[in-house]
Amino acid sequence: MLRLHKYVLTQLLPSSSASASAISPLSRLISAAAPAVSPNPSSFAVEEYLVATCGLTRPQAAKASAKLSHLKSPAKPDAVLAFLAGLGLSGADVAALVAKDPQLLCAGVEKTLAPNVAGLTGFGLSPSEIARLVWLSRNSFRSRSIVSKLQYYLPLFGSSEHLLRAFKRNPYLLSSDLEGVVKPNVAYLHECGLGACDIAKLCISRPGLLVINPERFQDMVAYAENIGVPCGSGMFSHALHAVACFSKEEIAARVDYLKNTFMWTDAEVGIAVSKAPLILTRSKESLQRRSEFLISKVGLEPAYIACRPAMLTYSLEGRLRPRYYVVKFLKESGLLDHDRGYFGAVTISEKVFVEKFICPHKDAAPHLAEDYATACRGEVPARFSFT
View (cartoon, rainbow, N blue to C red):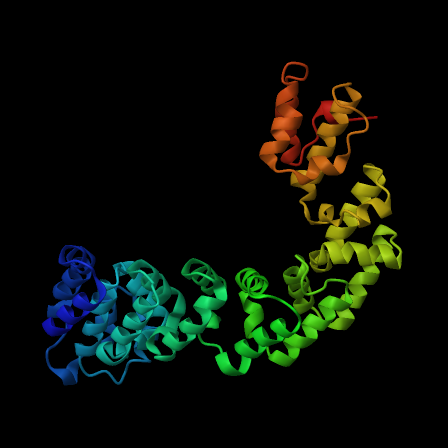
């Protein structure tokens, strides 16, 4: 056990003082729990070990112990716990890891875990980044293939930061079939004309796309282009997300609903979808309410909305309606030119909106900020009741 501690510390941590601070909490936990574990291998109580030493709750331990019934000694779990502590994982992190993947306690430190860490360190990952990776990778970290996969993914995503962000969004990247699924999908994107930077951006924003069956993935790319979003478009990742959610028949039905709801022509619905493909994922009720507000209340023309479909992605209660009230109030009070467009007021950030439309009028309209806040809560102040 002491030899393993020394081996892990010399491999992972830059200084003895840093390693001591990282490993001491869990070491104390192991030492404190030792009397509860019988030295007799034939009577090793796995469930008790999971509770007393690993920090699992009793229900978690009962579930996890079923996968560890073959363990006859705490030797291997002790080595794994010390190794994880050496990585800088807290006791709570370790408990959560073991609860998710009990068989991690059976992994070989010298044959698997330590070589994996050495390989990842060689790629430039810091100890803290490796600790995050262990947490995100679930059972993949006890597989030697993780090093070869990281060797492929790091250049693809461009940096360890982007890589870890993608794994957080989709941890199945590490357990997916690299040769049969991921690489063919990336190669197809290259064939479609996407450069390395474009592919990196797509992978970072929608990492789940990489693990889709290649045949299905190619159909999605083709259908994204059919709805007017070419591969090189900034909206391409959104289009792929939209078409991934529905069948071709469902998408066609949603396009028809958009046409009818917003009174668009075929050309206008095509413009709207190509500029904001995620409107295809909005519920019918959501679209209907926005149509009634923007066309009937605000008085916008359908063609105007089709060219500015981003409006349909904003919150009706939190942005569209409150800002309309403010703009209309300012115009009727003679504080804003009547030719100032509504679209410009809804697309800017909250901070900029307040700076441009609220703060300049605090003397002429001292209650405007309060009324705007009230409107954002879904209420209509008396001063915003227009005839």
